[in-house]
Length: 573
Image (cartoon, rainbow, N blue to C red; front, side, top):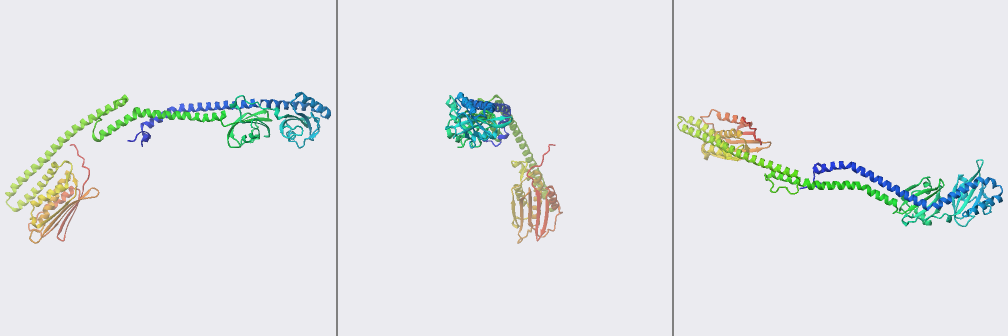
């Protein structure tokens, strides 16, 4: 017996409905849990992003301070450059004195619009037309920070902070301050687990100014799907992407100098933010796992506490319905009280049904006995009438009177045969037509008007059950037909007659009675034709179609009549 989730009708059963309503009941709690889980994941992610940004700001604090001071100094020098730029010697002395005071600037210079550096702290006159560090400042007419890895003024890689010089809204040149990249050192985080894989500083054009841990190898750590110029938004941002090697990395970008310089830290796959995302995805599944676990526990509890015992109770009911047996062992044990009461109610109902059925069987047996007794007495009474008529036949004055009384006697005995079949059979609502016709034909042949040595009789009957209402007219019809056949069959020597009687079952609940006999010369004392009229009357009682033919000394009676499988309705008058 299939049960549980394997049941074919599981979706219409109690378990499915309970689980469905439980799911609906848990739905609001599940939605709240999902929302809270996502909020916690978002807060955890925000915390991880702030942590990465804080570490990045800590690591680039020196760069931020140095670049902001350099740009601030360049702005200040640009405002007074109009006072000294016309005297190159005086201008160079001023810039040289300023560079010596600050100590960590490699050089301070002024480049005019012709890209000529005639005023500098190193007292050199240089043509800067081919130097991109200064050209960027002239093109943008804004503060810029660029890098130079092979300068004319220093052998070391330098970072150049530039500010434009304006007189009456007209740009007259650029003040530039050069610093060694080594002076803008990166502060390493104290905790090793908070150390980025690489650290890079770049300007708004995406040009790399400084690199932290990793050196040139850090270029493989840059994001594959983004350029540095695309990351120059003036806000702090954290994102995930693949590096040039296709490995997953976390990136934190912060502005060091507003709209000018930016720093980006690169974190490995085990960075807190990436772990937070994984934990967030797993925690998002937690409400669904809890929901599934709740359904499993609910189904297990429902199956253990109710469904198993209900299935046992159903099995007991089926066994009672099939073979009327009550359960030998009650459920009992740890079964819920409600189910125990259901079983007790079922047993009480089943016991009541058995008692009622026993009473009905006794009553039915008594009625069957009485009905058989009635049919037996009717048969005996009909046989008594037949005996009285037999006495009357012996006292009949003429042969014609004897023939009439014998025909009446045959009909009465035919009815007696029907009642005999009814009380001898097990089922008094149906009669076996085969046995009935065999007895009728045998009796008619025994008391027939023709000698058996002149007649050959063939019989063939199918097993057909008919109602008692049809048995009487069918018996009388066959008796009349056989009597007539014996009456008209040749009875002299040398002329062998034959009678062929058959009853066959047709389709659509129909049967066909066929009686064929040879016919000779009509006797001189031909009857009144009552037999033929009776045959036609009995055929109408059977609701049948009668066909009578007489060709080539062969007389045929064929009757097709309905044989319903169900009994006629019985009314209690």
